[in-house]
Length: 79
Image (cartoon, rainbow, N blue to C red; front, side, top):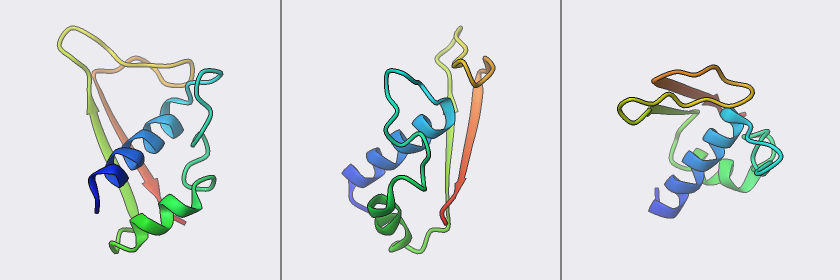
């Protein structure tokens, strides 16, 4: 998978997980709102996207929708 697609995939899954509105609502319903990206990912044979996000030392990542945690595992099934 080309590097720009990898970055776009990570960004989409993080937006879908953390739902950082009103600042960024693009991809908030990933994979449903990103058919072109999903097509590129599925062309690799993938059925799921899994991101593991670890917070920098001494910090916890969170949003209004997600409780503070040192480690977040984001799993998205591609429809």
